[in-house]
Image (cartoon, rainbow, N blue to C red; front, side, top):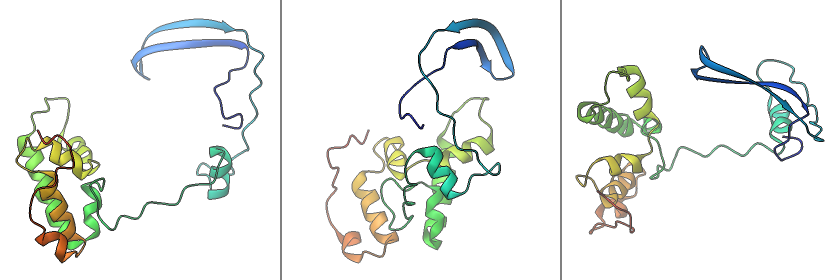
Length: 164
C-alpha cells in the first residue's frame, strides 16, 4: 500500500493450490529474485484498526459512507430496511427470488438470503425477465423517497438498459 504498486521482495515462497484453504492439492516452492523493497506497514494497535490506522493502511483518507437514503437503483434489497415500506418490499422481493430460484443443493436458505440482501435493486429488475422494468423501479423508488411527481410519471424510461 505504501508504494502504491505491486512489489515483492526477493526470497523463497511457496505457492499453494487447492479448492479452499483447507483442501490443498499442490505446493510449489518458488525462489524470486527482485530489487523491490516492501515498506513496512504501520502497526495496528488492535485487531480492529481505528480510522486513522485504517487510512494509513489504505494510503489515503477513508471515503465518507454513501447515505442509504434517498433510495436509488444501486440501493441493495437489504438497505430498503431503512424505511417501513422498504422492509415490506424487501420481504416480497426475497420471497419472489427464493420461490423463483433453482440454485441447486450448494446454496442453503441462509446463503441465498445473504445474496438477495446484498443485491442492488437494478439486479432485481434484470432478473425479472421483463416482468419489471426500470421505469417501474424508478416509480417505486420515487414512492419510497416521497417523490409524488415521480410516482405519477407516465411512460416507461428504460434508459437504454436491457430489461430481458
